[in-house]
Structure formats: structure tokens, C-alpha cells
Image (cartoon, rainbow, N blue to C red; front, side, top):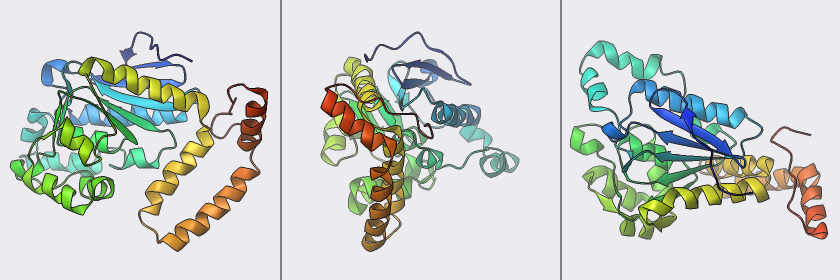
Length: 273
């Protein structure tokens, strides 16, 4: 497989998408607005993730931004509209997806943070499994500087990713974090020049699609995120049960056979034969 991605097509409000080599790349595509997110764009992004997760040809997702920003957060016009009490019901009643939707999916998500991310934009990156960041980019939670709370599960995510102290620092201060600090505290896993971020993230995702069992990756994601809410003994016991199931599964046999034959494994899609 290669990491070449075909020409993208519209994928909803303010979105583009393309699929190649088992990887679906989704762009936040409002560069003139720093990829700021309206409620419609947020909803369509989650719909795009659901569609990718349901597609047996898609084995990994890459999320990135058009232009110089990953996502600057909620659209200022959308925020201003929330001053009207009638519009606040949209957040709870008409969104259509749980805010933690990415954690419920089986397909791994890689964030290619080509530029800055703030507020809701940073939250979208936090819900990815692995984060690649442009050396020129800056990140910020922003919420406290807008008189808001830690939104969309970020107060649950950040301590689990970088520890309680570092999470409180970023959430309470809303200060900007550069790529050097983001890497040092474990907020991102790769730092690259801006023009290399997307290609490297896609190559990583292609490697997942080519070499890793979709069923295994789905279970591993569930183990990691559900393990955050269970004790060590319960997690270990559950891992034994899952390990026994995987040893009896077709993917394990295919992995051993492909190694013996010196070829790439041909894993079935999740739920496939």
C-alpha cells in the first residue's frame, strides 16, 4: 500500500473526504474561517466518522484541516447565537450523537494537526488515538478565557492523556502550548514540519490498515478506554477472556500463516468472515 490519497470530495457542511489504501482522510474545510466549527459542521463530522466506521474498506481514519489551521474551535457566530436561551437546546436535544462518539467506534483515528487547535478544535484532536502536530502550530483549551467550562469531555480526556497536574494547568489557564511542550507532556506523539504532517499521518494510518487486524484494533481501543474506568484486576481478567477469544479467531491464524509465508496479512474487515 501507499499513502497516496485521491482528490477529495465534499463530505458535509465544511468537510471534505477521500479514501485510499484503507484510509479515509477527513478535512475540516473552512480555511477562510480557520476551520471554525458550526453545529451543522460538528454534526456532519460525527456522521462522517460513523460512515467511515461502518465501511468495511476503511481501516483507519485521518482527520486534518485545510489551510493553516487544524480547527480554531466553535464558530464565533455559533457561540454568539448561544446567548439566546432558545438556541442552547440545540446542544443537548438536536445534535444527534453523543459527544464522546469517537470513543465508541472501532476504527482508529489519527489527528494530523497541520496547524493550531483551540477549544472544540483541540477536543476533536484529543478524541483521536494518535496525534501528529506541525512544529509551527499552537494549542489552547481556551474555555476559561471565554467564561466556559471544560467542554465535550475534555476534563475527562486530558488527565488520562497527560496527567492531572498538566491537564489542570492547560484547562485552568487556557494558555497557548507550542509543539515542543505538547510533545514533552505527551499531548502529541509526533512533531513535524507543517508540510510533512498529513503525509506522515497518512503513512502511519496506511501501516495500520496494511499490517493490523481491524478486529484487534477495535478491541484494543475498547480495552484502553473502558480500562480507564475499571480496576486493574477487572481489566486483567477481561483481557484474559479477550485473549482466549482472539487465539481462536481467524486473524491469529492468518497472522501466523502470513509470517510463515513471508507476506502481508490479509485480515478480514471487522465483523467479516
